[in-house]
Image (tube, rainbow, N blue to C red; front, side, top):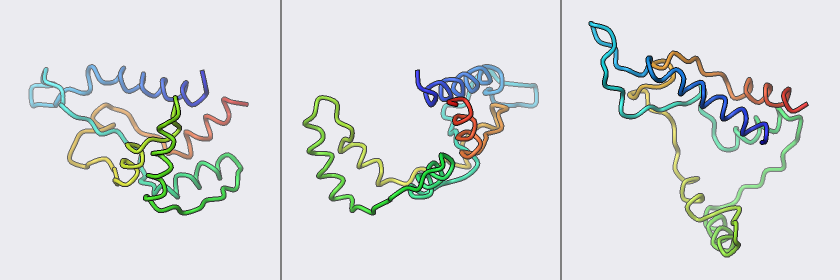
Length: 132
């Protein structure tokens, strides 16, 4: 299993272990038995795609060569890639790249679960230390 998959599964286990008690809605009498229907879990900072790539590269000690590409070209490449048995990119993924997604302040998140999220930089550093 890759380091990324291991870190991800450990993080998911942490969330699931904290969910059973903490995810219940607080009430004056304690915790209700009805959990929140939707949780939005996100780190403490919002990144643009470019910032995300540059942060990952900087943490790994790399100098990325980023080239801006219009979504029409991405869509064309994805259409060609979908012919392959295991396409590295699909048109659905391109469609999702065009949508800005951030966690809502109106829905419960890590705080309700009793979890303090770590920054991307902290997680990347931990992953790099584990892989050495």
